[in-house]
Image (cartoon, rainbow, N blue to C red; front, side, top):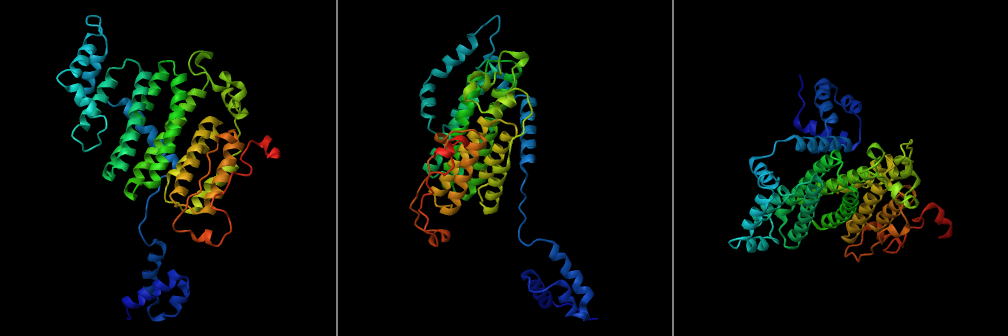
Length: 418
């Protein structure tokens, strides 16, 4: 019985994968080894060549994050956290004596000077554990859940500053750990936020500030990603996703219905009715929400089709899509603004050619104004970098380097006057 030689098998596989022939044609040309050859060829055809990279869906990531937040809320605190908590809680006998004693001890023996010296340290520096330890003690000495939310948000902002500093100093090995610490701080802030909401603590101003700050931090993370090395990209993507999720949660709580018709949770529609889009007023009034998602769905498809490696671009759009689906237009405005800022960062780094940049920018600007209800002044300015290597798409085009302002970037009623 004839046997299939390795050379014959390799030649047949190359012909099939190149599309030059079909399986039936190959088998017909080698009748003497047809059965054995069929068994050897069918398996490689259904198994993709090259490495398989798993890509979790947005729904899976949302479920996983919700599970993480639940676990964080249910996980027992370690002994040292319980110790600091016991110092922070006033007792009938000692009142605030123990917290004040701890504060005095922190300032004695030159310890205050060491704490000051630790402010600009990074992971790996001698005094960095002191810096993070003081942050833990600070959380333990705060009595309210809303106060702890603010402290964890401050810690996240500090981690973002450290990320910028680490990149400036060339400490690329610290970027992944700092990105993880940033996302963890936001996860703790969200867990404490849920407790504060359950306790009916006043949160209006905190939620508004949280939503604004996290939108700005998404833009800062996008700028970092445009310059970060490949090994830091995944961590920065997760950090950007955490910021987008936290911003969306803050918007949900701020725009939610009032508990019992009053108190915390008043909607933006009641605070400033003339400034809130109709879709958001509809959602806050409890009426049916039927947004038109055609524009943002097409934008997501365009970004996916370009094959951009930076997945945080899609993450921002998916978060904005979810916000628009719930008629939470203010959250969508922040997420779309962060998307546009990241587009600018990619173009500024010459990682996106002019034609694709212009198409995506103008498309996102239309979503921002037409669907999210933003004004033309909310659209970031476009960028016009001088790239050393001109992309091939631009060499064959007479388009200017800058796409210019979007032609229909304003609200629908203003387009006729532009």
